[in-house]
Image 1: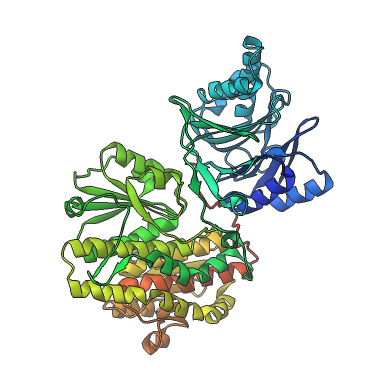
Image 2: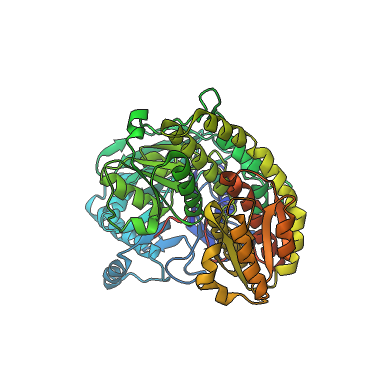
Length: 620
């Protein structure tokens, strides 16, 4: 949540920061601002609203310079106003700061600073940090008046960080050290881009694409000094750190819209390719198994696993629920899915043979990271299923599997969900072949997995039909989503997508549970979306459809092509390819993603930037 961008070098910094903030807007879009080191000191431009509002302000009031920092905000402390927008000024203008995260002890620090005479202009926790750094800078200048400016600034930051409780990614400008940007991280991601006589800084890699191929991911408790002549990284307790330079393998086309009107639609239609990417090089037909490198556990260690815990949040949690079905069916390993936000504070009994997987698109989700660290602290192997190489969870886990889905810009996750389900299917196959799954069964699963990109391409052909259904139901304000077994998580995910981007109240349930309460909601104004492809349990779900119809509830069905029996009951049917039950979530999710997209458009919602949401939840 929130986006940071910074630059030191020779380019016109305002344009570069503005472009970076546009790329980061999916992280927060309540307000945006920049601070630029100009000839007469630090100059701020900031405004509530989308980054476009800041761009308009900069057209009216341009500012020139080649060093600066910027921020796009997802509000935590204080309303969405110009005053609460970042950057914030510390002291009498000697410090400017942008901040991601939450400072938990900001109230006590604010009271102390007010007693010293500091005047606050905002309601934010960030302004506390700005004044705190200004205070320590003033004290250090008195004590070490002959010390080089950069060293004094660095000491002021470290003294301030020692007083902070919470999470932060900070980026700071100093009026009296005009060629320097200093940044620090504790729990909120920062990545440095390395150029020739120029350096970039951002809260994720997207603003760096097209400018550099070399990046350094800052670790917790590291502080970096950026100057056109070079960078210096130190750990707050262990001293100097040698930068670990990694290659950024993304290209600008990964974050361009192309011919699509929205990132969400683009990412929905990328799913045949992203599923193929998740499968590439991971299918071994000769052995009838999956090839999964990076787990960093031997086959002997994996065979001793007697329980798996999958922990995640949001859409990733729904993918984990599908994974539970797959792992128990193929590998016969008891599997439990935990909300990461709950697991981090619980103390569940875990055997020595428990294996923990953290599932996350961004690799920075605060709750998932904290849950993983807690399990790791207790000695359990902690692996990850993650999309972002170099992310905190990818680096801190003992091993893992990357999705290779490419950047996901739309706030509502789509392609990451199907990639996660694909990877979990591979994991279930891999562990299953180590245990009870036969060679012919493994070969059959591989053959079916190879067909999945084409099957998803076929599922996308429902697009026009989904638009028709969306037009019919866009004005309804309550929806029920219902499915059974591995399609129950798909129902949950469909309901979440509708809530996220159209602001319609929607609930997902196992279809049979409808009789135990939710059927009270059924009426002519409450459509029920049934995920009802062919399966051994399909007749049971069709009986549930009949119960809704008996109460005059509209029924939308996701069904297999040619299934006339479903069409006889449902008011509207959207067809998907007829495939094996365990793979149905991969095709059934497609029409639900498209349905939420088109309903949101018809209701005038911003599908890529839904209100109150941000892409990467890096605060608790």
